[in-house]
Picture 1 (cartoon, protein in one colour):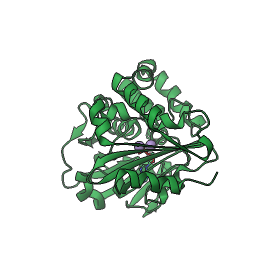
Picture 2 (picture 1 turned 30 degrees about the horizontal axis):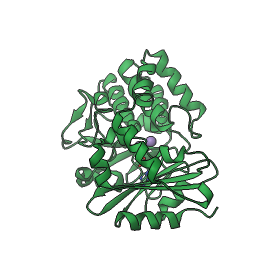
Picture 3 (picture 1 turned 90 degrees about the vertical axis):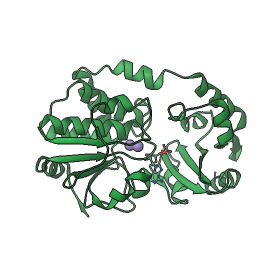
Picture 4 (picture 1 turned 180 degrees about the vertical axis):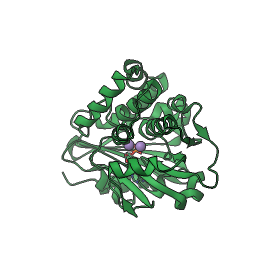
Length: 315
Ligand code: AMP
Ligand code: MN
Ligand code: MN
């Protein structure tokens, strides 16, 4: 594996012609927005570029990929993964491609590299931030669709510039998106200021059913699939839900557990500065960042909740 700098990556991309870009499983705004902006940027340079169709992309982010997707790569396509920390973060149907991915552009600190080349900047708040730097180096000028994709990437991973991961470069990326004519207020309203009744109902359930430890500094909320089904939540409704128990006054670190089928439980941990979500998830083979991390545990929900509670830091 070779680590590339931004300018080496810009050259690496410029030197190649046909690209297929891969997003991660349970795709969020950062992976989708970064993939869309990279695809549009490469097309502006006259290259052939597509985003590999990811069936897990939800209605909220799907419009960013309109006209950009492709069902499967062809021989000779260069595969680039964005915002994908590990092979296990690829959608299951992408796994046959795992060994063929040539480049990873990411902001997750590496535990194991899985691509021949990588540009990884763990200090970046979002992959979108890294991508903006790359697009500039490649001489690409932002247009409105690119700007809206990039803004979505940076805004979602920074919680609309509220999380402590937010850097000057996050704001610079947003400023470039505003200059390029992106309708940032509309994106903010849609993502951060619009709640379905289903989302409010699951928040209400979480409010009633979260368990508190360490005098209220730790919150653990295990949501049975049956509850999600009864309320009828979609993945868009659940996007960002793990920030909700963390937002309760006094909570320093919170885990949200969801049953995802096949006897597996998806855990999302969110932590205030000074607490380490990544460390809790690393316990279970997952990872992420200090402020936000995830893992998947193969255990019944109640047992998983107990194991996660035990992996929480001493307070
Ligand atoms: P999530 O709780 O799934 O929203 O994830 C929070 C952060 O941790 C995101 O930056 C994810 O990319 C990262 N993450 C989630 N699950 C894993 C995993 N199994 N391995 C490494 N990073 C992960
Ligand atoms: Mn992501
Ligand atoms: Mn990200």
